[in-house]
Image (cartoon, helix red, strand yellow):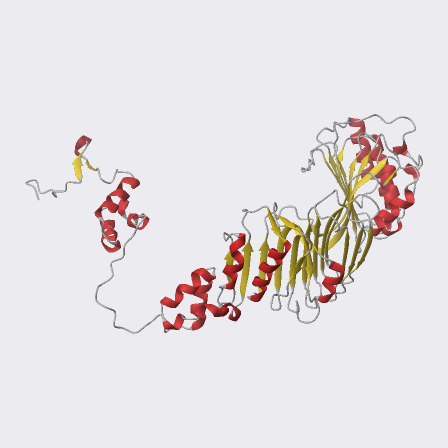
Length: 554
């Protein structure tokens, strides 16, 4: 205490007006941490600094290096760690993530010895081992791996640009000798495998195999008997294999994924399996187009197929239990079409469906309904091409992509200023479409090229399409996006209203470039008034309904 009775605190200095200022407390955190580091104290002493100031509270926990001082006297109490149940031990080891981290646990206690071999799943990762040393490393692997469920993950580093098929086969044999339950084998994309096919050895215990390469030709050996009898999931990327003979031998296969990249000779996909439940095929090379697809899978539930077609593709899908589908065929050129409309893509997918309720005040004013299958067609008007006699070939082409039943039709049209009503009504008149369709969505895509139609343009044929009648018994909802405000759009709308007795909802979205005049707005309102049972909306700006505008009808 000083003479005035104030505490003798060197941290406190008098500021303006006699106020006391905590100068140490004003230092930045980085400097305070440096002070703690230079003290060289353990965690207990550092934690005591929290009483100095609120600024110091928890500051010690942010030190880069914390030392805990343990007493020199040996602990003589019971081994509490060894008293824990094995299930808890296995959870601790499992969170370490790999065999390399889990195996040293044998130093902790005798109870931990060999415990890592009982882990539900561990990963043996060989990512940085040179190709020439991989086989020797696998040969030194402990036999205890047989006792656990482990993933053998081999990633050949980018060190060589060419290996021989024999060397690669020998490496796969060394991996198979360890009998992993799961295998992931990755070759660099720039690596070339010389000579002939690479023999794929047996992985008797493997339930999951994933192979990544570039144009790797595999020839499975001893594909009968117990060779792959446990395999449930197979993923091949850039691998050429005879699917027609290999897949039927995999009696437990549930999931098959194929990524076809730059593969010559993989233009035919034949997959017949009595156990397959999920199939994924991604054909990424437009220069080696598919010519044949044959799938026979009686219990298949999910199908994902994306491929390129340069000519006629034979399609045969037999999957009566299919629930989810994502089908996409991309044409390398306009080889099918109708009139001047060429088709560039055909798709079929499963989509979630929501039904809007009448309450607009609630945020969650929609009900989720069962999913539906949507058939999608992408077509483009071709001024320099025409398909005058292609009706039958177009119908057959679209029909073979209808690999399952559907109830919705999405049309993506790049009109380039042409009339679209005639071609859309022709498509709606196809037997499998007009009998199944419940929802119709038309997306009018913009284009920098917009030509005025000549008087006898093919896009307006047949010329009587405006008075045509098509009985669309199940059509309930129509959406048209990208409307530009032309009279032929209104003509098409009138046909839809007239031919769909069960129509309940029509929504129009105007293009950003659309500038409808008052006469067009009056006509579109009159159409809505003629069918009061239909909920009819017009969005002047795409994505937002402006009910107060003159073109909005309900």
